[in-house]
Amino acid sequence: MRTMFIILCCALLGCNGCRDQRESSQADYRDIQEALIESNRRRHQQEDERIKAFCLEKQWPVSVTGTGLHYWIYEQGTGPKGTNGQVAVVAYTISLMDGKVCYTADRLHPARFVIGKDAVESGLHEVLLLMRTGDKAHLVMPSHLAFGFTGDSGCIPQESTVIYDLHVLDLE
Image 1 (tube, rainbow, N blue to C red):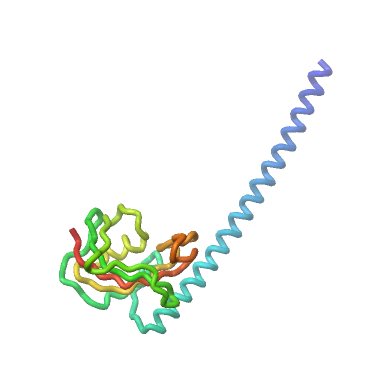
Image 2: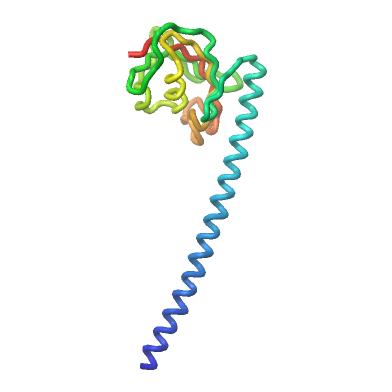
């Protein structure tokens, strides 16, 4: 009986130590999570300030979506607006804020993708719901709507803001 009592006490003491360690780990996790959120918030704010300065310098009268996409439709088309599930046929030039051209798709070799479904930048899906066939627009896409933290392991470095010159050729 005495042995059983000693084993039970040791088990209770051991579990109490585990609970303290678990609570400490959870507190550490919360601190790390809060620090990461604050760091990301600052990075977002700095990127947004750079985008605003860029658009001001270019004198682009941009509109801004709730996600932070800056766009200016500088030439109006006459067709219908895009909808989810349609195939967008577009010509574009993608460049970095320093002017370096990364990718192009022209009228002869346009890009095609399904709005809302295909694996392209989320900023493209978003803006195509605002554009019509024939529209031409400048987009300033923050990194979280473009190629994100990783870039594309090609031309676009990680955490890069990208500039699109986009022409909607057709919406099928």
